[in-house]
Image (tube, rainbow, N blue to C red; front, side, top):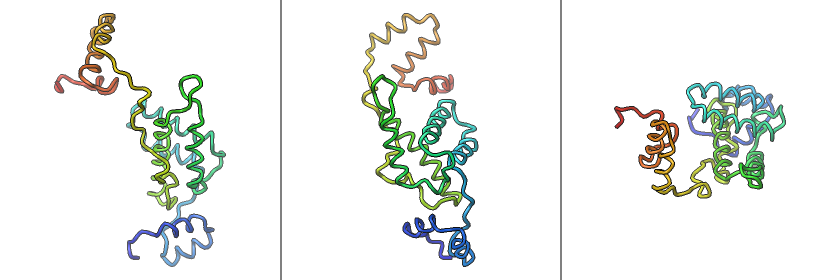
Amino acid sequence: QTSTSIPRDTQLWLRDIGKRLYAKLLHLRLVPARIDDEPFIKFMQNYFTLHGKDKKESSKKVWDRARNHMETLLPKDTQVREVTAKTAMEFRNWLLSQPGRKPGSKMSTATVNKTCGIVSQVFGHAVKVGLISINPFESRSIPKYAGSNPLREEYVTRDTVLRVMSCCDNPEDRIAIALARFGCLRMPSECQELRWADI
């Protein structure tokens, strides 16, 4: 035991060898224990259950969307180890071909990247617990951060905001709009969490 990481090529080879050969290597203490494989969708759901307890409802919806996309693309019994880098790239390309919110549009790159990031997070956990050695979504050719979407950006003028505020009957609604436009708070999360002590 040298406490050094196993080379990537060796990790890929170990991922595909049979249980009998792997058991021999384990007996010689050359490899870590291999956890029994399981269907990826089941593993993904278990991960969400374990790590999603304190997540906001909006985050849970995004996670569920990622799981639904994987469930649509992958055969139901696809094991965690059967998902390869090729599968990951196919998943990204498939997402890019899916319809977007607007009629005739495709799913935005930001949404695709965010979805791939969530799935990559699940595979990262699979690596951590020893189920697999390589995260198939770790490739740089699969972006995993949403970033900004210029197509959804629009400058809202002061006059427009004041007109909207004048139409609100509820003072809390006027305050929320003012905090979003002039206070630069994220809506609704930062506005809802704001306390007098923060002012």
